[in-house]
Length: 294
Figure 1: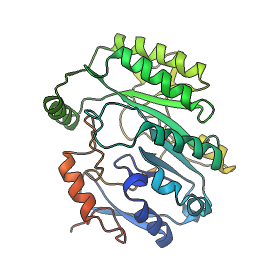
Figure 2: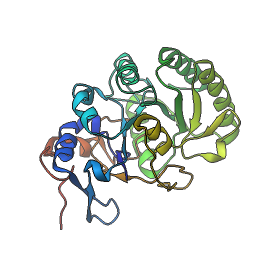
Figure 3: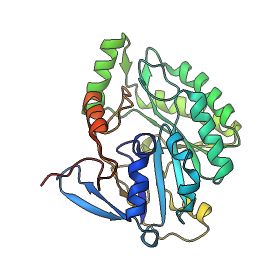
């Protein structure tokens, strides 16, 4: 079993104490986001093939890296670094700190451990296409040698995403748009060439209709990458979490409405106030991130 920690929230940034306590306990409880019922995830090393972390700030776990590496299973870090303006990303760490984390993961863990995510690509009056080209080129140059893959996707306009974007745009005086596929494909080709020049393969998450020769389909939960790090075979079927997802099967241990980063395009949080309240009331010694009722 591959553990996903987590597509629903940023466990390394905000819940690392809870995660390490759950590793010690050998299990955690997770609330099903649809039914509200709980299920148990076995976190004993004998039952875990590997872990995929999703984060915008791996700093709290880097300070306990020896403890994490003592768990005898490989891990990959899907590290989102976009460097967008504060009007869009209210509370993420500065890009230089994130760049340092990615370099350190490559050096201290394994060259295949960090995967850079420039995700999502958001078109606004603050971040037009030319902004993305310059910003991406700068970040890619700084990450040369520390990762061999950059995952991108274009913002998917779910109801929560639209609501959060509209609110941020009104508050911070910008406009956003969702351009047609040909515009996205043209930008992807240019980004892919920049990535290749920096020694990276550009891949596209959950949008296979935009894939092309230079921009391949992403597999963010990737058993083969975990195998490179761990040195053993992992039997995991391809089982995406939504249409267009090419990930290997995994069990996610996070909860929605728990990440207080406050990104304007977020699909996992209804409102930052809710996430902040949940974060403040979180109990690191509990079985689950949020209390499970019933």
